[in-house]
Image (cartoon, rainbow, N blue to C red; front, side, top):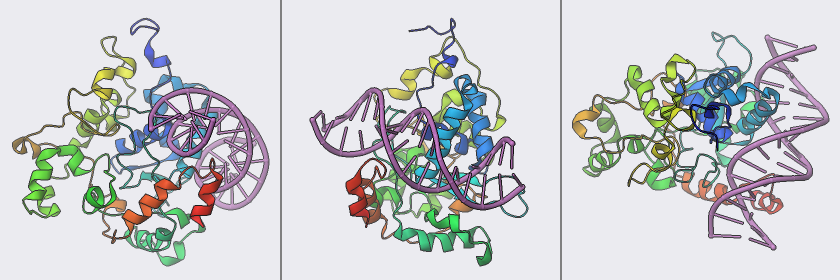
Length: 304
DNA sequence: TCCTGTTTAGTTGGAG
DNA sequence: CTCCAACTAAACAGGA
């Protein structure tokens, strides 16, 4: 094993899947969505490994964006000229990863096709798009819902940046007290855009200050990619979802108001809608069981 | 022409 | 050993 400071870990392949890397990039943006080129840039800025063989990994990354329903494509608005669409994370795509493993998710996030039609319409509305702008490629657009409203309890999924992931038990106690989510969120001071980068930074310390888009410094005192791997994989005795989870799980309510989370952000069109998610549990359960669409023939049968 | 996005196919490796 | 997620390669279409 190469040692930090010698042949820098930064040249090694990061212990993250493309999905993780892409999620990091997306979450790093203030809008919580990025065009493909910016995702490339983010990854190359922070992981020198990916400054080579770009054709290979970028192809894989594009494949992941298309293949995984945890990524959603958001068309550019007329006032956002440029090539390609924006990519965002599905609000319910959290808790996909095995604890401590950035390499392998516990299950693949999948949106059931039956949701897509209504989702498409709703998303168009949320984005302020005219119906005439509905593109054929939007068929995969999933249904958005506010973080935490129905998600963790009813779906089993916890968004990486769901409020309960961010504030842990305190959130749960507040919710248990009967406070509506909105109140909790407000009480907690959600969101504070200027603090988002710090929050993300605490989730992915190796990424550093996200919004700066600055290349990640690599310290020999840290493990690969600028972060002690222990802090990622074994955060003390705390159990925590694997990937995009606050490294500081125990936060007092008093300090929460000064803390922020990338969940439930304003300005992100994907989060302002409030669709019914009553069918999500069944859909996702089924979806999970039918994953591996290219690898398992039998899944096709279940899908139909 | 290049970039973006989709899809198919095959391989690899971890988990159960 | 099987299942499945991750990865890779490649073909293809469409748009800027």
